[in-house]
Image 1 (cartoon, rainbow, N blue to C red):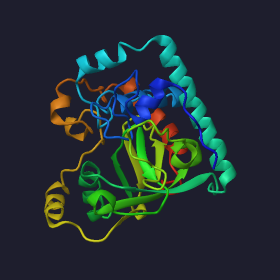
Image 2 (cartoon, one colour):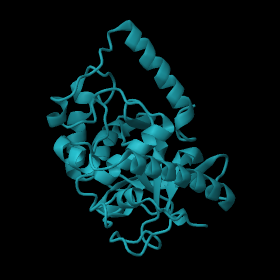
Image 3 (spheres, helix red, strand yellow):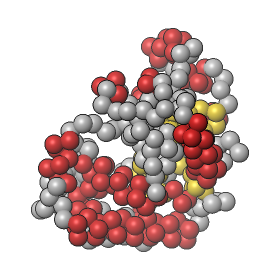
Image 4 (cartoon, rainbow, N blue to C red):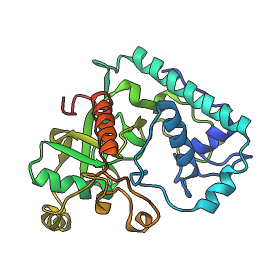
Length: 285
């Protein structure tokens, strides 16, 4: 595949890490402070017109407001717009390369992901309850891989799904890794792919058949028995325990009133529209 060369120092720092102007860790290199992720996901929300219901913000978000002000307050409008324009170019370039690669089958690309504890804690009770469809929390951009490997990072559950190609904003084989950055190489290492999850409630919903695992850890199995009857994740916005947020973050957020008829109509309408276009063949038709 051809590779896209990033010119914007801001976008380069957000993805790869420290440059002369921006001493960040970057999305692909630990990303302490989550500044790179925050910028990239903001660009994604702008490109895909993503609007989340209050209370369902991305899992990674914290309340280091002062830190964000210090980092982003130094960015000029010109730098910001240049970085966004190049992010959009990267997306269009990736789309073109994927279409030419032969990897797209019926408009979709098969990808895999090793799941984190905050995901498996929500997924497992549903699988044990024989749910046909499973929903779990997601960030606006989620890392997948294209190499078919399972159970990386010491995890015990993975997901395999066919992702609509239009939701892929970065495919590692299409992105040039500058030698001067400190991040670990992804060529020949992680087969990194970034997938946009635009659901307004901050979750992904897939068929239970998409999830693979060998043995359930005993502690997780016991936890699942307890949670089996109390699972409420994202069922209704007024349930604070249903948010993807931590308990500390809940205190700082307001939740929409689902009892309001106008709000309820809007939510249902938007949810149906998003579900029709967002997911691949694993999602309920």
